[in-house]
Image 1 (spheres, helix red, strand yellow):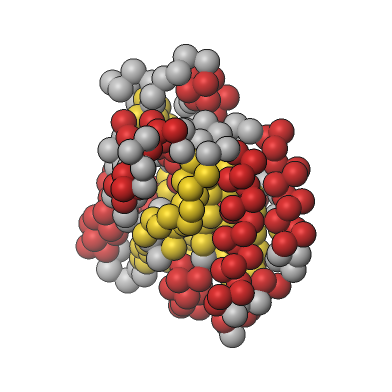
Image 2 (tube, rainbow, N blue to C red; image 1 turned 30 degrees about the vertical axis):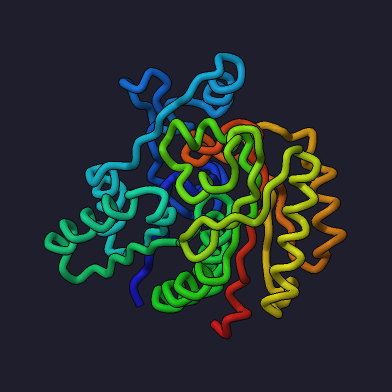
Amino acid sequence: MAEFQIFSDGACDIGFEKAEELGIILVPFYVSMDHETYYKEILELSLDEYFRYMTEEKGYPKTSLPSIQDYIDAFRPSLEAGKDVICLTMTKTLTSSIESARTAKQMLEEEYPDARIHVINSWLGTGAQSLMLQEMARMQKDGKTLEEVVAYTEKAKIDGRIHFMVGDLSYLEIGGRIGKLAVLSGSILKIKPIIILKGGEIGVGGVVRSRKKGFSRIVEVTKNHFAETGENPAHYIATIGTTTIWEDIPDFEAMLKEAVPDMDYLPPFQIGATIATHTGPGTTGICFVKKYEHYGL
């Protein structure tokens, strides 16, 4: 049985330290402040500097996806070592990162015809993508095969969810990502929509005009999800993410744990530049995915 290496694009927001701990290799996105010079997120431009630019200078950064060559350079050492490859990317509806990875796969398959290279659209992103990766790494540690890990991703991406509140809709407007949200209100930039990401598609879970009400609505949407689907919250892992408003996280977390107490809550994380460029400072939400053993794997 061949060994395999787990990869992900940087949109997962797992962080390089945690990724290294789990044996996952990240292929970062690029970030630009001046829209001309691009730097690898975290490796060449810290999130502290990135968010300072957004909050203090009221700037609108840009991101760029990993290149085909970035993926080739990332995959090649593992393939040369005789390992197979599985790469999880952010949902295709929000970025073309997967296309770079797929092209790299096709090119490398000509060079390494016996290798198995799987490139998978997570249908998710940020913390939910990170949770999937952590489950994949746990499966690998538990001795599961590459095929079993691939099977898990195809199931988990259906059941995974992100429920979040956008911090500032002007970032979505400037980035051209406002899409379906534009029908919500004539004064759209003054509201805070609750967004649901599922199945790779963005939906609206409500509209509020204050952060406090936004937290309450996210909790309500999350609780209703389990009531409506009949899914057991105890079968899921969850994590709360925010871009900049850490002071509100303890209360938000307490609300979620009271409403849905049986989920396995991991520590909160910081949403990275790939997502925050489009959602702005103040974006906060919950991500959850199903644990692998509850698929019978």
